[in-house]
Image (cartoon, rainbow, N blue to C red; front, side, top):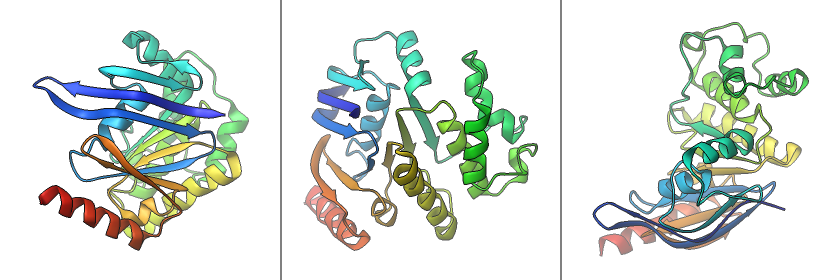
Length: 241
């Protein structure tokens, strides 16, 4: 089954800048896909369009079988709420709310009741047991990122989009977050699409998509951090030539 599919997606911004140029991509359920590329390669635009945060200029995008490219924002918001989870570098937690309130906030805004058994299993899996009453300021960076991951998974989304999720963390804490991602994919069948600049992070994914000039340069399977760093080095050298 397919979690997300893009077919001939182009995104042209005001001024004629083409951020995506005819991108086609299929992400099956249970996949862990990393997206890499130099600044301006189109990786962030790919995430924004694929998740329904932005609208493509042309092409087709489906999330969990629902076509979203032609939907109005209110309809796309509904698809995001039901089928998409987000994890960002900056955590995006509400300082005045407790950990538990932050986790359940999207569900409460949607007018739905949380599945307490599901949330309890996620909290235990992420090592947050005993911290639900704390404020975000009382947590470490890694713990805050785990809260954002539980929040992203609370509605059992078809796909989680992670934008530089380890960018603000030290290497040891980042490794723990990536271990968690791998566990979620391998044990729960979660689909994760992760934008990252870090070859070591990308090497943890099943496949790594390398973006260049708004296009997919190639997709590497089970590449090592060294292989990805070398591949990106050649892309940068080519861009600077």
